[in-house]
Amino acid sequence: MSIEFVLLCIAVLVLIAMALSAACGAMIAAGRRVLATMAPEARARCLLAAALAPTTGAFIFMIGWFADPVLSHCHNHSCMLTYHSTPPSWPVLLVIGAYASRGAIAVGRVIADWLRAWRTRRELDAVSELADERIRVLPIDEPEAFVLGALRPAVYMSRGLLAMSDPRDLDAVAAHERAHELRRDPLARMVASLAFAFHLPGIAAALERELASAQEMAADVEAARAVGDAPQVAATLVRLARLRAHGPAFAMGLFGSDVEARVRNLLGPLGGRNRPRAGHIAGFVLTLLGVAVASGHFIHAGVESFLRLLVA
Image (tube, rainbow, N blue to C red; front, side, top):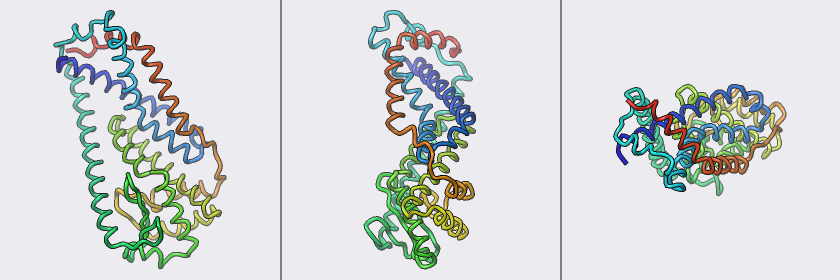
């Protein structure tokens, strides 16, 4: 398999990812009312699925594409022979280069953030005290609370926050941070930050904001259920947000963005449609994979026709 043909294959997958990104952006814009009727937890799942859609869709398309030559030994197609030494056109190469650069930058940022989080957690664990089996107290006068760690998240609260806050506020803060920890939100955010590199820039930024807001609202709702008082959690959010506390940039905490919308969500009905669940999304992806394999012949034929548009 020549480098020219590999580049053509990559170009097809990149264009598929771009098309899926545009479709996700259009669906999110058109479906805002539907998203608003969902529980924040379900909304976060949908937005995470949308973040992963270009990479997942391109992978499914690739499986269907290569399933045909594997299953039928490519008797009906000769794309590899036809385009074995035909390079992509310059515009196509520029698109590939742009996506490769964005992917490399995203990977670099995630690795850098992971390393900083790992070093920061080691330093914080060395100076913090274990208040209970799930919360560590930092010897810091500034009021801070956050979750740190993607694979093994831990909740941190500062001594200043414990001293300045009402016990009811502390219960709400602890419940919010524990919700982030149990839901593995830092890991989901890290995976999403990699997937955003394969979205169109404007759509990636919009999805990132929506996902962060949905995750914070979901943690707020869990906190409200844990303490049994949603208005109390809303009041805590407002009081502590005014303190302008900030944890590490790569941590997740109560002092996130979009406080006004989160307060409105807490003061309204806490219900909402908690679907689709993770199993529904996984089943949909597996169904698409099966359809792609069954339709491999048609996908392969379509790619062979499409390759003519990509060559120099």
